[in-house]
Length: 327
Image (cartoon, rainbow, N blue to C red; front, side, top):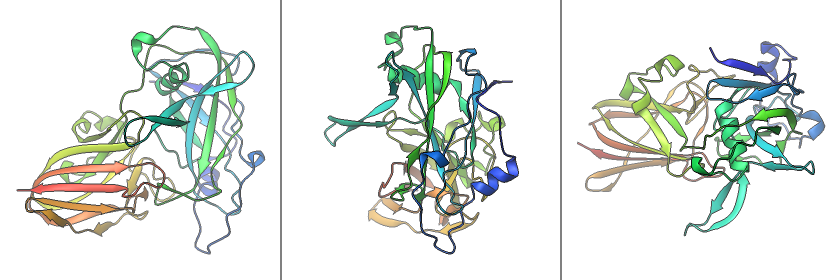
């Protein structure tokens, strides 16, 4: 069983977390730009302990929801950084490249999982990878053990329409919380991945016990950290219905979709149609990608090879593209 490093006491019950993190925009309320004062991460209970990160432990983190003026369902992402001698923080960042592959800037590099409730079990391995990224380590052979150091964690909250379209004025970072003695280890980021779950694999449950069975149903990042996932699979004939999961943490529900993403929030198949672009190729694209259990449904698929591309970058269009080579 994984060790859990407590980063604060859970101050509210699960019921109140679910209530505070629900989305209710039926009345089209006006978005209130939140303040940092309304968005706090609980002070680490283990702030002064000596913590050696490893692939076998997790870090439990809890926080409050920003005040958006209504009970919005925010998306939360976590970022790690290294505290420098002058007290500043060097956060984990990734390169932004232009179409020719030239580096044109940097943006925050978050841990791979999106959270929709106000608590998280963070992978200690991912924290170590972000520490190493902040240190400029891109390959394992570049790693130098720097021992125990002061490490910062912060949470970004934001509201997205259709998962990748950021609602203006909704993004906000919490103030950092600190571990005063945390040690990394030799590990670097590999391409991230998501899972295809649906009729092709018999709707196998997205839980840790099925990790091995779902290994062959991963879509991998086309470049480390770019959040564009792609996978090609042989799909049998029949009704093709599916959605994607960013993590294996059970099915999820409307209040907490966990890792589930699809074309809509309710658990229902959305009838979808291919567009023939070449004599032997069918395409499908849309931007309806959001946290939820909705699924794409292609009736009477004749069977064949399908390449699935999912773009989780803010404002990405198209958000999904499926290319089929039917039998």
